[in-house]
Length: 348
Image 1 (spheres, helix red, strand yellow):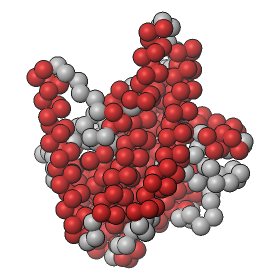
Image 2: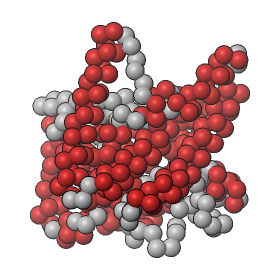
Image 3: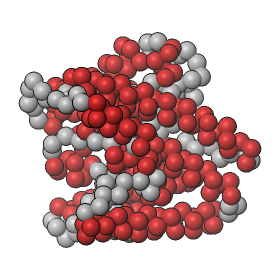
Image 4: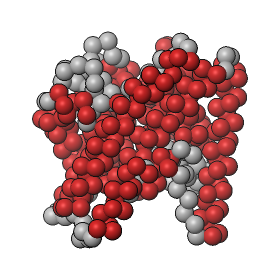
């Protein structure tokens, strides 16, 4: 892990990426509840690490830097995996099919399916970061910023409703490039992470607040389990239909994960999750591909899906991607040094 980085956040990323992998397995219960928080958590952690720009002149160089760190690995991973998918897994090798599969990569968002399904997150994160930086630069007071972010949060719900209506009533599937519309929603989670930084230590010291967050989280799970409420959250598919719960439920569960990560970070489980967190980017990119490949030969349950989805990408990271300067830079977005450990994992 990198010097001067907050290693407990690596632990949180490790828990988060494990939830992402398991959430993509065939276990419906795990999928249902893990989707409540795993992607909001990564947006929040990215917001936690955001450093405000000092002036407008810094904006363009910052965008270029973030673009290099996020988009170069995105396009390389997507292109390589699409090629492998066509050669190893696809029964259709027609020119038309090949062109369609590669055309999905620059379009991004909901156009990405199969082994590229998780890739929507990267472009959405990039747009979320840009949007937050613009708001932070343009408006002076936190109150004004909160109002703007709140209005965009409401707009995201309205857009999701309209798109769902068009899809249901007119059988038209509208897919916005790069999940730009979803960034209006994820902006709230990103902002939560940024502003949480100022209050996190105070929260950590308050047993009353911690207890309230735990009880609130358990309450939501219990209410859903006993069908008092029916709650679903799937950011990519724009399944966010409850303006109040879409903020409260991810928030309470995110805080629980962050608090747990802070507490266990120095322990053996904490260090284990931290290792996963430091490799969260390639795990996110590769876990469905390896499972799809393995499923061609053997069948297994969600636990083996999770194990394969974590272990194989982790091995590729350690044995190949971090081993060479070029792969470390191009596939992990670490353009700063020749060190083995990348500084641009998902939440950085």
